Length: 120
Image (cartoon, rainbow, N blue to C red; front, side, top):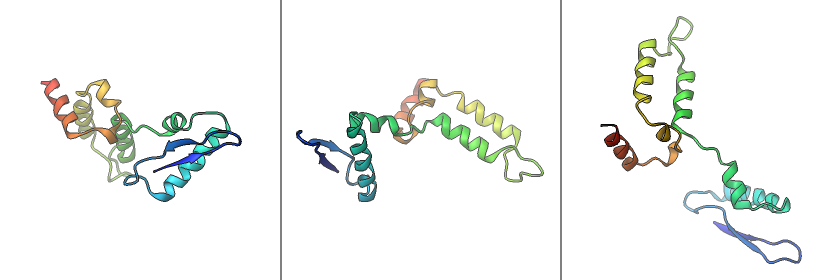
């Protein structure tokens, strides 16, 4: 989805908000309002929008999972056994730091195959 934003006495600037099949109209409108704000501040909307988007790394997902589950105890029946946590940590630490800090939402099957062949 794209549109133009014009300031007084200036040419309209065209920016793409996102792919129409991936971004809903409601989200695109919300992003367009942000873009107008960026332009009012004299900033480039596309660059500022990239800064605002949060990167979900494998490390972040892993840490959140472990903290959400917690350690099994009498007060936390759904927690993980300490042995299970240790096994998870052992296998997670086999990944390279570069792979742990990649955007988890953009990892493909090919990336995983490539990383496992590098480990062997």
